[in-house]
Image 1 (tube, rainbow, N blue to C red):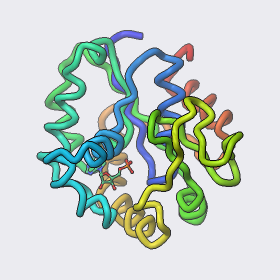
Image 2 (cartoon, helix red, strand yellow):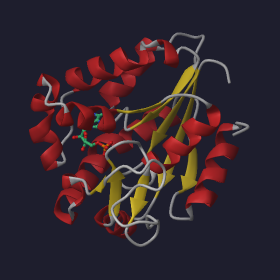
Image 3 (spheres, rainbow, N blue to C red):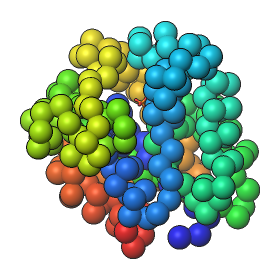
Image 4 (cartoon, rainbow, N blue to C red):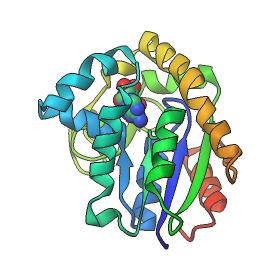
Length: 217
Ligand code: AMP
């Protein structure tokens, strides 16, 4: 793959993290997830983590300057020079504009939107289990770990996200419709987006994304 950026957009719990991790592995590019970067900062008790915590706990967006600096530091590293996959960024039009500024004409951009009905989002988030050591995502019913509480991929400890409680997910969905859906329209007027029905099985969604971006994953 040349220098290209893949942007995965969709509501919280649409499967962006699951699909992004698999896609990044098969394309051999870094999976850059702003939510994961913030959670790392929280776990390491950094100053940035301290600033982001209250926004994250309530399901609100972290202020753009904090997000953009953190993200652009990450993608400036060597491993991103041949391309990378963005999960959770951009979350609003201002962030999308920052990305446009950053990428010159040598970069291509593919935007994939995962659509999942709201009821399914709440159900998925409520059962979601994250790994403390890698980016693998399990689910209490639809993607059960072989050993309870342990990640199949790396043996790490599984945990539930604080902000996956139904009342916070509803707020996060509200933020998605208000702030992030306009980003889909932003890209639609600039080269287009590819829409994927994210309510299907993990494999079906993966195949549809690969077809969308025309990659040999
Ligand atoms: P995620 O794991 O992508 O659902 O992100 C978890 C939380 O991190 C979000 O609810 C926000 O509080 C924060 N966050 C992640 N990415 C962004 C972003 N691009 N802009 C603002 N806040 C973000």
